[in-house]
Length: 321
Ligand code: HSE
Image (cartoon, rainbow, N blue to C red; front, top):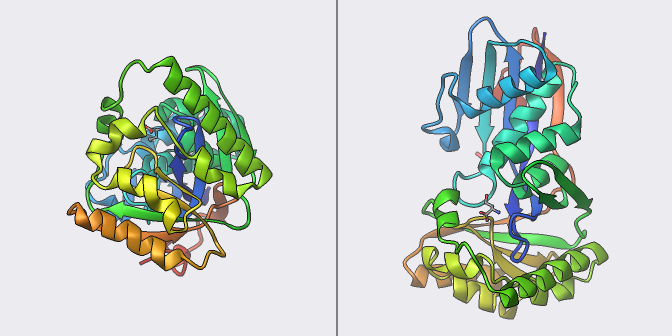
């Protein structure tokens, strides 16, 4: 039997107006190694893994079993190692990357009988929306729509000069809580506003008209309702472009804020200071990171189970710690 190592990117979802629809893979990663075992065992490394279950209720284990069931094979006992640089419950798609990593690793372990599309369908129903999982699975910018049964998508190549600055607040915000803040109905005027902005944003990203992002990255579906959960957010979204950003949005369900930036902009440190100072004024501690869009989805390496090199040595040099 083999040992499969999967490196899967984080993601930002919504990109402002594209609620539950747009996602982009980011240069922050999680690694999952999986092999068949005599007895199930979890080796979880790093701060992001604290509190993650180490029995068969573990998400990676359960998702892997779903793949085996779909494929009609049995691999009841697994050895799973995981390390992640993606902060949990901050709006950077940590759960989506775990789901995608587990699906891809389990599928590769049994010779990849499930298609990428099948993995996308499974990932979308597990996550409940296609935006983060699509980005982690396909890489790049992913436009997707899900009707509760089938998810369709188109992947766009990120512009080579596109870079992002994320401000990650020190507090966690669950997607569930951030979705609870949303109204069950919106006005026709707000719906039309978002259709316009989201369409314009996709067209701007596809055609490379980065100057349009500023006008397109506006939203009336979710960000205004979530603003109360993230002090400082409104000021950042309204004014980031004045400090050199191409546009700014709440990353996924938050609380992370993301600014899109021209990689060649001379105003990067000014923008970073603006984000940090705005959050600080609200008493919010945050850390910033410059992340690039990632064009590729998961990287899979298959080795023989007899290979002696351990998991952390295999990924050493790539992880942030
Ligand atoms: N589209 C989702 C939301 C992303 O905004 O709730 C969070 O995972």
